[in-house]
Length: 232
Length: 261
Image 1 (cartoon, rainbow over the protein chains, first blue to last red):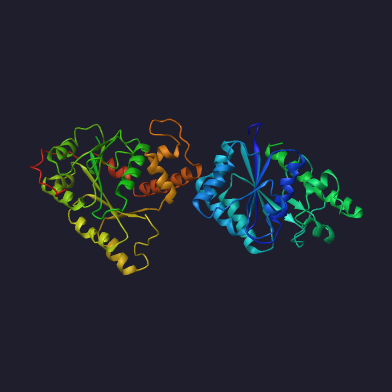
Image 2 (image 1 turned 90 degrees about the horizontal axis):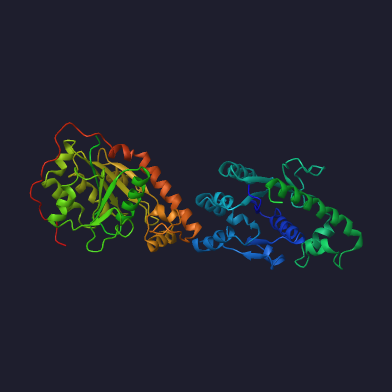
C-alpha cells in the first residue's frame, strides 16, 4: 500500500434509522478535528441528512441515472478530494453496490491509492444479515466492518473493552448515550468538532464528561481503523 | 493448417446493431490473437471502418471487383478470418449470391469455414428472416443474435412465439448481446475507437484520453459479458477448424448482381 493512501468510507445499511448519518457525521468531524481534508457525500433522501449537519463538507449526490453516477464516482477517484466519506441511504444501497461491482470501482480506487472500507451498520432485521453476507461474497477483496450502534439498536450485544491498538477490530462500536445527550446531538446546530475543541455554551456542565468519554471512545476506534488501513 | 473462415454479420432489418456486433467480434478476435480482415459494405463512407480503420476496407458488395476482392482472396490472404459487415437489406441477396457462386457449396465441402451472425431485432418482421436465411446455410455455423438495443423481451413472455422462431432451426445457436448503457454507447461512438481502446482510456492513436471512468467501466462489463457468450459457443474453435484434405476453392462462377443500391 502506498504511503499516501487515503481512506474511502462507505457507511451503509439496507435498513432505516440505524444511525448511518450519525456515524458519517462522527467520521467527518474526526477528520475536521485532525485538520485533514475531508469530503463527505450524501446519498440519502430521508431527512435530516448529512448535508444538513455538515453543509461545508458535504455534497449531495444522486446516482439514479448515468450522468449522476459519472459526477459522483468520477469525482471520488479524483486526486484532490482528501478523505472520502459516503453516507449511503438504504434506498440506493442496492443500486450503489451494483454499480460499484459492474464498473469495478473499488479496484480502480485502490489502483489510485484510495483504500475503501465499508462500515455496515448491523441490525436485527434479517435483511441486514442477508445484505451483509452478499457484500462479503461479492466484495471479498474489500474491507468490510460491522458497526454496532447501541443508540439505535440496543438489543445488539456490546463489548465492554475498547479495541487494543495492535488488534484488528471485529466491529466498530457506537456506545449507548443518555437521552438528553442524544437529543442535543440530534440538533442540526450541534457540532462534534466544535464540542471537541471547547464545550458549546448550551451544554450542561454535568453532561460534558459523559459526552467527552463517548466521543473519545469513538475517535479512538477511528484512529485504530486508520492505522490498520495504512492511511494514518 | 487452419481453414480460412468467413464471418458474415447481417440482418435485413435496419437498426438492429449489426455494426456494433461486428465491432465486438473484432475486439474478441484481437484478444484471441486471430488475424482478421474486415469488409464494411456501407458504401461510400463506411460505418465499421471508423472504429477499426487498420483492418477494414469499405467495399460495394454489389460491385464485381469488390466481390472478387473478398471471395477470391479468402485462401490467399494472411488473415485467418474475413469478417463482412453486411448492410441492412442485403443479407438475403448476399446469401443468394454466395450460393450461386458456389461459396455455400465450398463451405459444405469443408474447404472454408462459413459463419453467419444473424442479427435479430425485437420485431416479428426481423424474426421472420430466420426461416428465409436458414434455407441458404447448408453447413454454415448459424448464430442467431438477440441484440438488446432496448428493454425488449424478444417474445420470451410468449413461449409459443419464442419457440416458433428460436427453436425452429436445428443446429442454430443463440447468442445474447445485452444492452449497453446509452451514454456509454454514445461516448464510444463519439470517440470513434474500438471498445477495447475506449476501456483502456486511449485515443485511436494510442495517446491517453480522458473518458469517464464510469462509462469505461460499463463498457468493460458489457464487453466481458459478450466475450463470455462467444466463449460459451466455442467461437474460436469454430473458426479454427482444421483444413480439409479437399482441394482449395476454385475460381467462382460469374458474380450475379446482388441488389440495386
